[in-house]
Length: 193
Image (cartoon, rainbow, N blue to C red):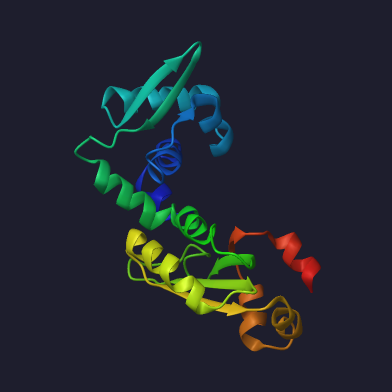
């Protein structure tokens, strides 16, 4: 359970996560229900409450209603920071890495991946592929500023990962614990080695 889910009821936490990470993006109500894994009616009720307080805005397009975070609301910046620093971590890091070529897999490990992270916890990131720290420095610095956390990347090629996954104590430890995949998934990673 993320800190966001401890601070807010589950439905509200999920809507905040989906709408406040990227406030420029608008989403259909049913899309929010599908992505959150929650009941459509429950999501609609919460959206109605959030619309009444003007935390979210909506517009109709035919019979569909689209929602987005209200960037003009006085609490918008504060709520967005809470979301980014708690549940939006994977999304922000993923957006930062998306334009970087050569990344085959990337995942967050450590205390933030297993839900034990604290306010001062750094983001531990393992990047596998043909990419060096120099290519990652700029995008990860920007993501770190957005999150209010330092991002500590570890990079290795796929061959280095294959050789070390059963022998390297660091990799053995990382692979035995929870991970938040930013690029690729656990099944793909297992097939690699």
